[in-house]
Amino acid sequence: MRAPPPTASNPRGRRRSKKPITAYPWAEISGNYARSVSEPLSRLMSVTPSEAHGRLILLHGPPGTGETTLLRTLAHEWRSWCQVDCVLDPELLFQSPGYLMEVAVGSDEHDHDHDGDGGGDRWRLLVLEDCDELIRAGAKEATGQGLSRLLNLTDGLLGQGRDVLVAITTNEDLAHLHPAVTRPGRCLAQIEVGVFPYDEAARWLGTTEGLSPSGATLAELFARREGVLDRTSAAPENTGLYL
Image 1 (cartoon, rainbow, N blue to C red):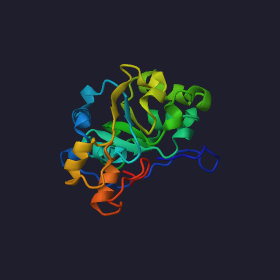
Image 2 (image 1 turned 180 degrees about the vertical axis):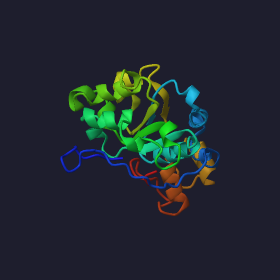
Image 3 (image 1 turned 90 degrees about the vertical axis):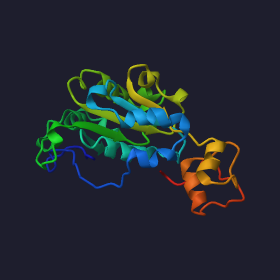
Image 4 (image 1 turned 60 degrees about the vertical axis):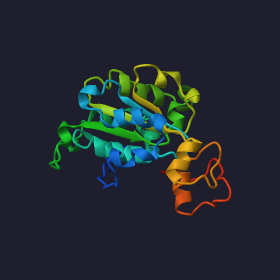
């Protein structure tokens, strides 16, 4: 979902485009994540509307650890009750009150079930990928009212009575995030999707050849298995396929 500022020639502002995505059931990909996050991720995948007490989902970790794959799988696991919208311009979304109201509150006629898929009665999950600047510690000073509007959507008057969830992925360390985002009760899930420890990485790969003692990201493991990385040397920390 994306929206240029409303104009006379484009009074609606936002545009929603339906796109098919490749997604796999959680049972098929759960082995691609470290044991330390298996249980919290399983709980998230099995959430039902009656259990959605927090409205913010925060996935954080180094690049290449599989946050995007998790979001695709979450869309698959929640498909019976939740519509997933990927917001392509989150900075504009939270800078423009009109755009935010239109997207989050669903005042537009296209939020109703014109496509026959039950969308008008389903929850909505707004996905904001790599949205570091919105939620880091200095966000209030850097983005103005953006952080306040995000919090209002997830835990304020704007979000009251609306079946809207927000999922954010970030590569920021948890300690660098704004405390208002991570306070108890704010998040439905707050999960660090980290690297595989050495022993788990070796088990996933079937060999210890080329593995760093610090472990490996999921992207590095796939790259090694496909022969993309040189098996005689460890990959630089910040490289890997985007997952």
